[in-house]
Length: 77
Image 1 (cartoon, rainbow, N blue to C red):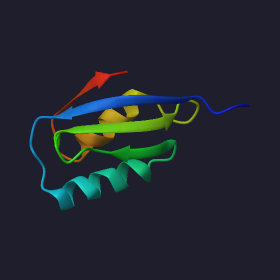
Image 2: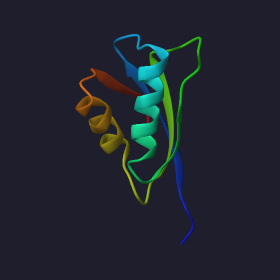
Image 3: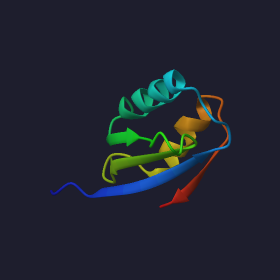
C-alpha cells in the first residue's frame, strides 16, 4: 500500500522561543506517522507538518500540540 502524504499548518497563538519550537517539532516527529514538522523563521507561530494519513490524522497532530500546553488551531487540512 502506498503512503498517502498530506500537509497541515497549525497556528500557535503564542510566539515560541526557537528552542521550544525545536522541542515541539521533535515531539511531533516522534508521534509516528509524522514525516516532517517545521516552521519558517519569519513565521514562528506557524508550523507545517507533513504526515502519513494511514498512520496519523491532522486532529491527532493538533491534540499533541495542545497537550504541550499550547493553544493552537488547524489552518490548512
